Image 1 (cartoon, rainbow over the protein chains, first blue to last red):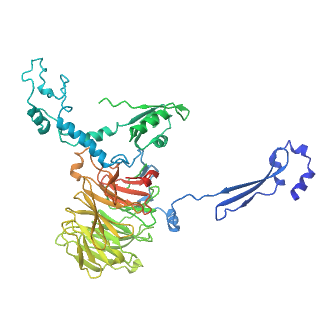
Image 2 (tube, rainbow over the protein chains, first blue to last red):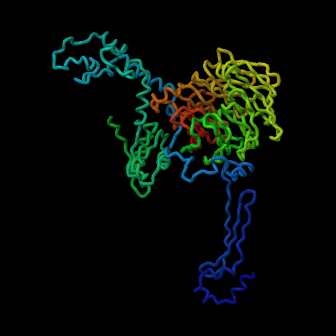
Image 3 (cartoon, chains in turn yellow, orange):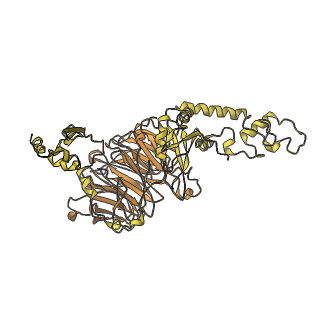
Amino acid sequence: MQSTAQPNKLRWGELDEDDGDDLDFLLPPKQVIGPDENGIKKVIEYKFNDDGNKVKITTTTRVRKLAKAHLSRRAVERRSWDKFGDAVHEDVGSRLTMVSTEEILLERPRAPGSKQEEAKVAGDSLAQLGKGGAVLMVCRTCGKKGDHWTSRCPYKDLAPPTDDKPAASEVVTATTGASNRAYVPPSMRAGAERTGTDMRRRNEENSVRVTNLSEDTREPDLQELFRPFGSITRVYVAIDQRTGLSRGFGFVNFVNREDAERAINKLNGYGYDNLILRVEWATPRSN
Amino acid sequence: MRPILMKGHERPLTFLKYNRDGDLLFSCAKDHTPTVWFADNGERLGTYRGHNGAVWSCDVSRDSLRLVTASADQTAKLWNVQTGAQLFSFNFGSPARSVDFSVGDKLAVITTDPFMELSSAIHVKRIAKDPSEQIGESVLVIKGPQGRINRAVWGPLNKTIISAGEDAVIRIWDSETGKLLEESDKENGHRKTITSLCKSADGSHFLTGSLDKSAKLWDIRSLTLIKTYVTERPVNAVAMSPLLDHVVLGGGQDASAVTTTDHRAGKFEAKFFDKILQEEIGGVKGHFGPINALAFNPDGKSFSSGGEDGYVRLHHFDADYFNIKI
């Protein structure tokens, strides 16, 4: 009531040309109520609207406590303890504590959700291949599969095949017993576990190449972008060693091929940081 | 996650310990100065200067005021956590290996190595409330096991002491009389040196890691074998999540074999296992040498590992970790 009486002394026409700030003294002070036990906070403000009428604005907000680690009072006190021992004379440049530049993930031994049986099935099929001995034995000279080893290629010197077919039993010993005539890497020997090669290959499995990334895109950004499509085993953004900036491309590996496919369909041509992303299957490394 | 790397030690790490509130992290290494760090950002708070040999282990009191360290300089020292001042030094005739405060912090168990003609021993010391009244006398000395005793910890209600070491046998002793109560048998027990021992958050069971490439979970009262976790490398350090049913094993091959191995095959990762299903959940890589020490923050949201490479790596888990499914 008081406040409405005061403005009468002023002429509104003059006031319009002034800054709005000058009128503020005419308004009742800002009131803040709360936050109460439910976290509800009320802020009551007054201001003049465009027509010069006084408006009361009530803003009600709820202050929510984040599920933050609760710190004991003692721990808070310890926070302000003085340094002691060698920590007192610590150089600014000593950099004892650094945050890793590398994003470390908890690497899963196999795709989450997949059962151990599946791995077994895969192992069986490989074992069967080994038993047949056919696919593993490829001649590098003539390209014939399952017939002979490169060193025994009948066409090596364009000589006529001396003994046309090495006895079947001999082939079997070559594959299983790793005969001493030709070196067979342990991982290629029949019956060997193929985990080693599998592990090396894992980096290239279901790999998606992302290009046209903006310079300040980092691995967590990519991970955030691709995570909705399925579980990711690896995220990599090429970083220029000298400048520390992204080189504009990166790779994302998915656990499931379908997820990768969906990501490609969805994100190819997607606008990200003012750039149009290009998302495609990564071409396997040549070597 | 992006781990925080702490390079305060010049020699391999030997032990890591969080205080009860989980805001301080104590690290021991083969250099002579145990160090305390803030566990959230990895900032160094201080060092405890005074030891003259490798420091093998430490323990911090529940109120985070006292620190006790065991060192190869044949002493165990009591420290003021806040100032780094040495309060007392227990002198032994042989290197001290492991320390553990009892519940209530009134007692401490300290193990000493075999040295010269002395055999290894477990010492129980009374910790005075006022450090000026502290005396060095042992309340109880237990002798018997052959070889080093790598870890000795208190059992429930301070009634027992659990020890494990080079002879691969886990023993439970009466903490009053020093009588041997239980012993792990050959059938279930470890086959090689037990390197580490870690109690669960509630103290009902404990985990041992051994050079026989396995870790075993035991009931703390009856010493019955509950679970076995098998890995492909010697286990140097074990930790148990206080929050989830996860156990973490760290290790690596012998120092002599490190340089001849590729780091990818080096198995310098911390391996996570499901405590109940005994199945591997995943691995966290990063160290350039075997992991010698592991510790879980009491809130279960971060863990740290210390390696032969002299680094402490502090990992704060991503949100994904908390809903990992097998």
